[in-house]
Amino acid sequence: MDVRQIRDFVAVVRCSSFAAASRQLRVSQPGLGYQVRQLEDELQVQLLERHARGVSLTRAGEIFLDHAESVLTEINKAKLAMAALVQDDRQELRIGIAASLVEALGPTLLETDQQDKMRLRLKEGCATELQDGLINGSLDLAVCLDEGRRPLKTIAVYSEPLYLVGPKSDLRSRQRIISLAELTAFPLVLGNRGHTARRLLEEAATVAGIKLTVDQEVDSLALLRSVVLHGGCYTVIPHGTFAAEIANKSLSVRRIVNPEIRQSVNVLHPAAVSASMEKIIGRVIQRMRSRTPVSSQAMSLVSTAAA
Image: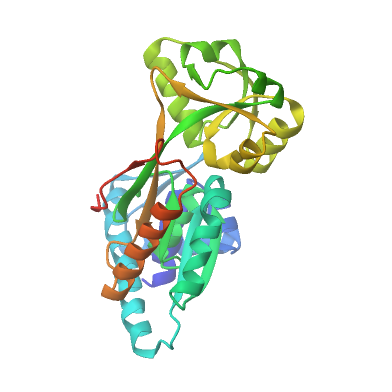
């Protein structure tokens, strides 16, 4: 049994298929399958059920997954300890960030490079990719909307409300808020069901017994921005996604109330971090709070105690 086999097994589980895991790890699918089979042969158990839709864990696989993730975490801890012995004047900080937060928080995170005298690598990705990066040690921390899965730690930094953002023509209206029930009058362009804003919106609508009209569904944030900016469409999104356009009155915005819908911005990090990394994470969080694009009236700060 070696680290590569453990890493490959965890990646296949998290991606739910060999094909997706091979793309993520940039290795061949047959090679990935060979590594997992070798692991199963050595353990003398079947870890994965292969089927047409991908893979699922066997009972043995569920038990081994906990141990595998712990092993990867300890390896990352060891790397940090060794790096501390040989680091130069500038430590490298590898930060992952969700695509929907890049425009709002990317510049703030880049300030870390200058103020903390660090080499910074910023990686954009989906929640699964970022959490996998933390577990396998390729990332030091991640900024995203989801809570981290075990054994990752989650620090909720702040929460922000969702808004109805639409065409410039709506600026004629003096209305600055809109109830959830009133959203039924608007054909919406939303991200896919995996997007946090859509999930929160639909959960609130279900509780309220309201049926929304989803006119279009897009997978890319860049495409969503283009459709709203140039297609005269409406979407539900955090303010920061269109902060510049809202400020220059290229788009209209109304805060959703009754009920207000909020999403949490979180920092995730491995369970085991060095004392120096813990201090850096704290400084990054404070900088995010002080530079957040969310207005002080709309922002809700959350305790920095790790979940």
